Length: 123
Image 1 (cartoon, helix red, strand yellow):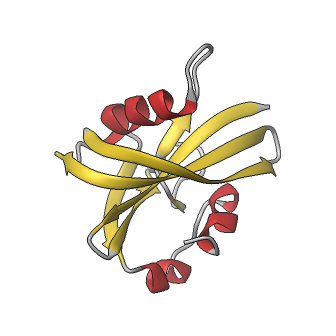
Image 2: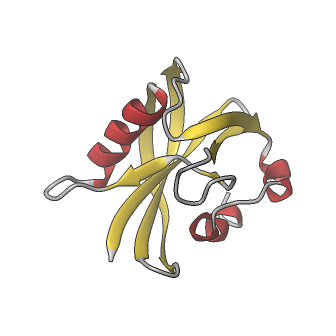
Image 3: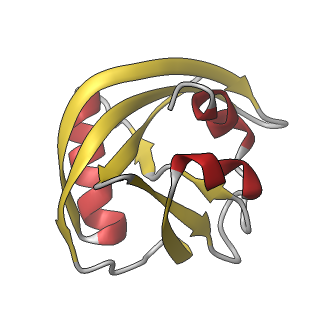
């Protein structure tokens, strides 16, 4: 099992989502950004690192929203989601080809990565 973390990032009344780019795992799917937790790293530290690496984004990490264990064809992930508040970003995309700030009611209009879907009902 791979431990992964994601941020449900708020700015005003909108939530940040990003679409995985062609050539990456789950290309074309939207997700709440984050990534793998490195050995010896705590989840909040991992989330801050991943957001900086993938988006050049800074956030304040708040409470944990939930955990979802999801089995994909070849791997199982333990996805931990945190509520975050946006601070700033240059939006330098490395793993994504597009991003949007959307109202929570609009999230169901997007094709989310399967592991992220359970969090939609918690927002």
